[in-house]
Length: 109
Length: 121
Image (cartoon, rainbow over all chains, first blue to last red; front, side, top):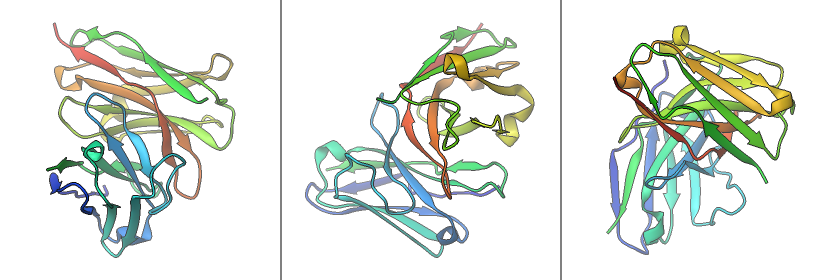
């Protein structure tokens, strides 16, 4: 099965840039989606198709994907961005179809 | 406005069968560009995909749980049902249903609030 690897935690000061990585074998050939989950809440889609933002998601959230690493970048980090972030791929040629990363806890210092 | 809402028991005993219902609104389960997945999250742990179903009744299950899961839908009631047999304490988790947007690579664009299921005698 396909494995997505995320760092357990990332810390960043307010106003700085946070980068959360998602590693996978040749992940650049797949489309990656990202979800934000705040404590006690359901996940929210923040990036789909590597770098597209759903309506309502601030432009501070961006994504990229190349080689063996996809990256979620949060610019001008705010206290309200503190959350867990999960990457996800869907590959019907693999088993299982849907894979989530282990999640990254973003702490705003 | 798209909403999904999970319902079912909050407590089940080991070996029992869990039945969860996801009631959706704001879209139709017959829409070919959409589907519904079940995803769970044990306390303090990561998300785990369980199963999904599409408008044409195409279904797929987690490899590790396939023998225990059944997903179905009732389009007229706007409901998707997941059953999981032989529940174990390790199945204690918040269970979410989420809408799938069908595309080159599907994604989950709306999620229910989740329902916490505890497995204990």
